Image: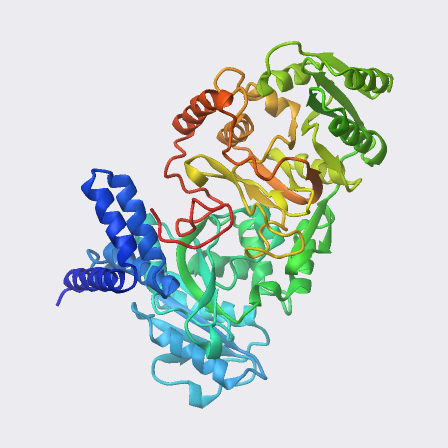
Amino acid sequence: MTRHSNLQSARRIAAIRDALLLVLLRPGRLAGAGWARLCGKRVRARNRLHAAIASLPFAHQRRMQAAALDDFGVLSGVEDDALPGLAVHLHLQPGGRPEQIRRALTSARRQSLAARRILVTAADGAPTDSLDGAVELVAGRFPDRLSGLGAALDAAHGLGIELLVPLAACDALPGDALTAYAAATTASGVPCLLYGDQDEFGPGGGHGRDPWLKPQWDPRLFLSQDYIGHACALPVNAVRADLAAVPPRAGEALYERLLRLTLDPAGPALAVRHVPRVTARTPVGAWLREQESRRVAVARLLDGRATIRAGQYGAVAVEWNLPSPLPRVSIVVATRDRVELLRTCMEGLLEDTDYPNFDIVLVDNDSRDPETLDYMAGIAADPRVQLLRWPHPFNYSAINNHGARHASGEFLCLLNNDVEIVHPDWLTAMVREAVQPGVGAVGARLLYPDRSIQHAGVVIGMGNAAGHAHRGLVEGEAGYFAQAHVARGASAVTAACLLVARTHFDAVGGLDEEGLAVAYNDVDLCLRLRALGLSNIYTPAATLVHHESKSRGLDFAPEHMERYLRELAVFQQRWDSIGHVDAWHHPHLDRASETYVAGFPH
C-alpha cells in the first residue's frame, strides 16, 4: 500500500469516526447543521458542524490526529530519499530518573516518521537498560546539555541530517512530532529554526492535556518567556557552525543559545518558523520553571541595556534603559462633559504620574455641562495643560488628530478620559518600550473597576473583526500561559491608552477620520504601523483602570448601528479580517472567543 493510499484510508476512517460520534453523542447539533444546509445556509451549516465536532470527547487528541493527516498529505508525494533528515538528541545527567529516560527514548522510537538517528550523550555514562540498536550513544563525557548538543550536531552533520530535535529527559515527543517538522521543512524548502506547540502529561503520564497553542515568532515575547526550547528542531549546519564559532560557556542553557541564534546582533540571526502542531509533551508546569537561569541569560544578552528582573508566572521582566534626555510626551485626552470621569483622569495625570517630561492636550468636544466647563477652565491654568475646543459632531479620529496637530511632544499618548491612573510608573513603563528601535505603538494592560482584564492586546480576526485578548480574566490569575502578564508583540493595541512616536503617527497619516470615525480606528492605525515594518508592543508593566461598561460589547444604540456597520465593513475589507488568523492567536484557537479556548479551525 502506498503512503498516499494509507493517507486516504486514514482520512476516511477519521471521517467515519466523527460521523458516528456525532450521531451517537450530538444528534441535535448534527440535525441543526443539516437543516441549515438544506435551507441553503452553507456557512452557518459548516460552522455548526465544526462546533459540533469540536464538542466531542477527546477534542485535543482528535485535533492532533487531524493535523497529522494534513502533514502526511504534504509528505505523501515526496520520495523517501527526498524527505528531510531528522535526528533526536537526548542528554543524560547524573541523577536522571530511569522511568523518565525510558519514556523519552520510547517516544523518540515510536514516531510515525522514524528518526534517522536517536543520539544520546551523557555526563557520566549511560544506563544500558535504556539503550538498544535504535539508539546511538555518542562517545565521550559531556558535563552539560549544550556540550552534548554540540557533539550530537557533529554526529548529525556527518550523517547528512538536516534537523536535530533536542529532547529534554523529562519530556516526550508525541507520535507525529517528527512528521510535523518534516512537513514544515518540505513546505518551506528552507531549513530554519522550527518550534511547535506543546501540551502537558495527563494523569499517570498519559495523553496530553492543557495544550499551549503558541503565537508566531515574536522576539519581544521570547525575552519574556522561553516558549520555544521545549519544542523545537534545530538546523544542524547553522547551529553547529555557531557553537564552533562561540563555544558554550560552562552550564549554558539551551535557552541562552537560542537567544544568541535569534536575537544577538553578533549571532547568525536564524530564521524562525512556528509549526502549529503539538511537538512536545512536558511535565505539568514546566513552562513556569528555570526562571533564574533565563533571567541571567537575558541579562547577558542585553548587556546593560536594561534591568532584568523576575516577572510573574516564571517570566522575565525587561525594563529597558531610558534615554537621556527623556523624550517629551504629549498626552492627548478627548473629552465631553462627564466631569467625574475627567477629574479622576486628570488628577491621576497631574498628581500621580512619575514621568517628569509630559504635557496634556485636552480636547473638548463641545461640552455643555457648567461644572465640566468650570473644571476645564481651572486645570487649563496649569502650564502642563493645553485646552483645545472641537465644537463639531463626535469623531474620535478627528478629535485626536486635532490634538496631535497641536502637540509638541516627540511621542503622543492617546488616552481616554475614563482611564484612571493606579500606578505612577505607567507612562515610564510605556516609554521604555516605545523608544526601542522598530517599535510602533505601545499599549497598556487595562483593567475594569472590578480588576478583571479589559485589554491585553487586540487580536485581528476575532469575531471576524478584532477583539480584546483575555478579556474578563481575573487580575491575579495566570490565564492562558500568562500571556496577559508578559510583555510581547501584538497586532494592535487600544487607543484607550496608546503611546506612539510622533514621526510614526504622522507617517501613516494619523487616525482615519473619513472611513473609521468612531470604531476600529486605533486597530487600523496599528495595522498601518505594522505595514511600515514596525512592531506593536503590549506591556503589562503599564496597568491602568478603564471605566468602560463591561456590558457594552456589540450592544450598540440603534441610532449608532448604521454608522458602526459601515465602519465594520470598511475595516473588514481593508484588512481582510474575515477568516484571518492573527499572528498572536492560533489556527486551532476559537476565533469567536476573547478567552483562549481550543476549537477546530473554521
